[in-house]
Image (cartoon, rainbow, N blue to C red):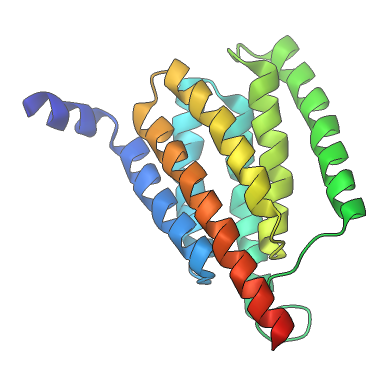
Length: 197
């Protein structure tokens, strides 16, 4: 028991980030606007965690999350029509463009990480970062398909965090993967209800 308390006291920022991250995800699934302030808090905590673990792309991604959380908070509150923002589906063209943007960002970020940092997984780190940039923007706009992006990103991230002994974060990403599937199913139901209404 003492070992557990000792570990928590040494890793309390990561543990707190995991807890706020779980609440953030729950609020995302339920479409509760308070996910965005929690996103800001979680981002600040994980900037520190990823910096100390040398996951520089993920650290930079947290800065992006910080700003997109401000945007998402405003957009969910106001929407483009002044009403609550509904769940929408992406066109095939939009999805293809999103995948292409993710791929291009992966190549650019991966090149930078490989040549200018000591990142242990430059292209995997870049892949999760690029996908997360696109998926978070899709969340801010309430695209249903963002959940599919998250399932893939979370699985890859979980593997990297296990390798770096970031077990609370790896556990969080296992939960994220499961909850992303639940979120997809929930938002799909909400989409059908919105279309019928």
